Length: 127
Ligand code: HEC
Ligand code: HEC
Ligand code: HEC
Ligand code: HEC
Image (cartoon, rainbow, N blue to C red; front, side, top):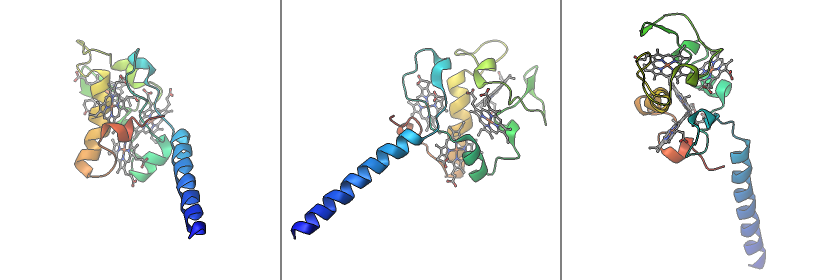
């Protein structure tokens, strides 16, 4: 009986520390463009995620290029950050503020496909 209790406590501790470590290991997006971010940076393992989601040949889905508000097909802006073009507020050249750009791109695909996280804490996981 006593051994069982020790065994269960051992398993519990291993489980909890495993969780803590895997959270620290998560790759995250840098939220510093938001000046005073209110949430921890969203978890996003760029290459691994895009491979699993079948996006390796579709860089421009996220790294798109626009001219006069028209999407330029087949061109990619992977040398730029989203915040290079999307301001904190919508402006005349870009009507999609940064936070909406991220949520629209990331969360909507998860909603629509029924795969990937949709709850705040699943992306903005505690550090
Ligand atoms: C699919 C993933 C995902 C989900 C779900 C999600 N977010 Fe985000 N959110 C992001 C990404 C990506 C950014 C931009 C990079 C960053 O700040 O981590 C962002 C940025 C933000 C920002 C601006 C930065 C900051 O910290 O102030 C806020 C506020 C925010 N999200 C709140 C929320 C809230 C509230 C929810 C739930 C209703 C939510 N998010 C759900 C991915 C997500
Ligand atoms: C699901 C959306 C998505 C897809 C698809 C995607 N990326 Fe990204 N990528 C991002 C985000 C988000 C960042 C971080 C940008 C930021 O912080 O504003 C990033 C950053 C990068 C960076 C680093 C830029 C920097 O200055 O740090 C490179 C390079 C890059 N991506 C290349 C690619 C290539 C090549 C592909 C296609 C094989 C690709 N990406 C597909 C979302 C994506
Ligand atoms: C080279 C400039 C540029 C970069 C870099 C850029 N965007 Fe955009 N994006 C635009 C412009 C311009 C629009 C159209 C805005 C409008 O209609 O007012 C747009 C529209 C959008 C839209 C709405 C249309 C759609 O495709 O659903 C989303 C979502 C979006 N961007 C997300 C992102 C994300 C996420 C990143 C970074 C991975 C990013 N953008 C990087 C310029 C850019
Ligand atoms: C075109 C669809 C699509 C877009 C755009 C997309 N995702 Fe995903 N995401 C998925 C799918 C599909 C999965 C499930 C992958 C699996 O586990 O098979 C996923 C899984 C995830 C996961 C769970 C861990 C993992 O990597 O599997 C996180 C976190 C995540 N996405 C964050 C993001 C963020 C942040 C963005 C925007 C920068 C984003 N996603 C954009 C389709 C998408």
